[in-house]
Image 1 (cartoon, rainbow, N blue to C red):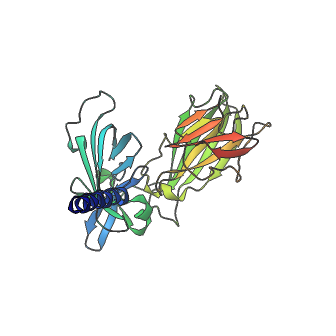
Image 2: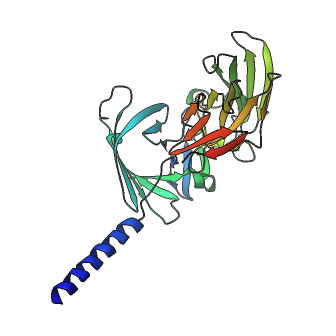
Image 3: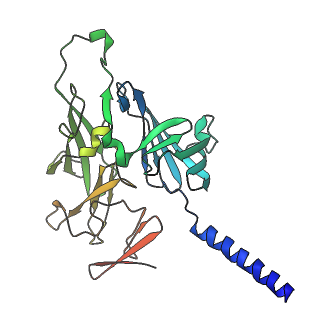
Length: 304
């Protein structure tokens, strides 16, 4: 009887230990964007240097983008360790496969509050893009010390030309913003997508929109448009990132009709959602991280 009680007690301890392990929460930040925070006399701010972006990290499934002012560093994740309050990444440079000689070789993301608003990343404070709009943006002025009193344009237009996205058409993305004011929700970017005939200057369509979350961009980003046949109708479509916030960037999908015109489809299951990592035309599937969806009879169903 004594031995039986000991065995029972031992089994209960093992069961309790397993339950604790299964219920242990781990920090998950894949798909999140973090902006560097500066301290000022009036509290925390986002400081935008002249001619450079606010420093940020974007966490992907198997890689990390570190936007450091005017430079970008793409890092492949070698290993990950997650606990309830901390995520640790060992990385190597994507271009040469070498371990970075900077602090980026070991990135430690530690949450500083229960809402996961602020994080300490290698001893610097960052804010999750979900909460970035709650901080004031301060722009470095003057930007041109040699010509401080020179008249400045009220607006600037930047342009990205993309000829390799599709075999059917070319795209030009333009962004216009006011140079004299800090951009905010009341003073956003005005963007335009120009669709051109392939290898031609013939404009087929103009699409204008106001991407409010681009206020965190110092310059126009040329890598925020992707093209594929997202609804498997045999025509190339395109998606553009319209919001950098949330657990992952948000994309708007424009679908090409039989008349060669592009329009938003509000009924598309992933409209204003993430961008698929894989588009499989043969099997009619879109893959998002670990989720895969199949299109049959105009209905998207998750593949288990």
